[in-house]
Image (tube, rainbow, N blue to C red; front, side):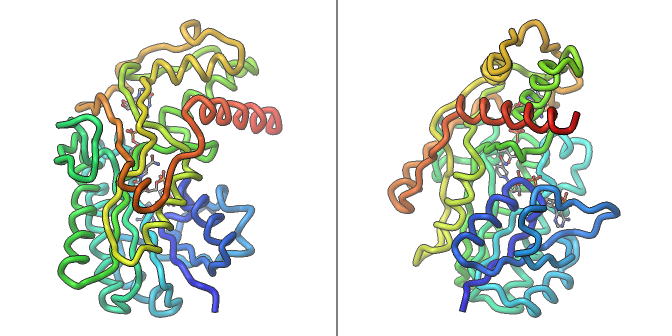
Length: 322
Ligand code: NAP
Ligand code: F7E
């Protein structure tokens, strides 16, 4: 019988790549999506006839109990979250409900229905926040700097707690920023690549950004979902940092993206205070040695190739749409 996996957050960036990855390995894939007034299947439109899509919500434990009872997955990947850091400052309680308590609701539903289900939690480098050491590993102390980071830290520890309390195969992937042409337009990489493409096509003249000095360890989303799957194939559950080990400032992201369309970024980028955060994470750089040694995982796509790929995808999409 084919292995069966449930993905929460299947309509998001990572959910779409993980669904492709699991389908290619012969899985039956169940996607948990929340009810919305307009359809949000854009990222999985090419897969919908091969997926089983079930409405449920991380806010509603009984909906997840029903889903687990009806579909009986062997693996659950919890990718659903309010995932935008800036929004978490404006909506800290919603972020806590979904991104923190939502994890407990899902773990508890698993405990009630079938504790032998293997569980993946989408933890985040935002938990390191105001970093206390460089680079960050699985042993680095946490210091979150946003309601999102705080909520993810709760999700991380409740995953560890269910593993230790109930012997569940529950793993936490501490993933650093990962991007793709399917990244939401509000995140800085896609904001820059999309706007560079739009400026090249004469659709607009400039783009407004916040802190150009912030540095991130950016990888490719399709590489990172592979690591999620590897974690659930191990005999023992665990926590793993998934990162490239290299960091770049937002300024360099702008240079590369505008270079890809033959423009000088300094002619088109405007700094606007509204995109600065009340508390910033200045420097993130991860050490993925444990994942390399124990999972055999390494990133395939580097930062410059990733940004150039995203600009080309945005140019092609904008040309098609115009
Ligand atoms: P994303 O594109 O923002 O996707 C988030 C998903 O969560 C969407 O499918 C969204 O559904 C769903 N969702 C939100 N609230 C929900 C609720 N109450 N019930 C059910 N589903 C809900 O995020 P992503 O970039 O793919 O990231 C996947 C996960 O990894 C997230 O947990 C994120 O916090 C975490 N993470 C991401 C990164 C990164 O760099 N991408 C790094 C570390 C950790 P709708 O489509 O209906 O909005
Ligand atoms: O910001 C700076 C901003 O919003 C990156 C999520 O996937 O990764 C993501 O969180 C940096 C920050 O991602 C703009 O201040 C400058 O320092 O793309 P971002 P993020 O906050 O790092 C982590 C690992 C997650 O877990 C999250 O879910 O870029 N920045 N100017 C800007 N950021 C945005 N969004 N917009 C700007 O105009």
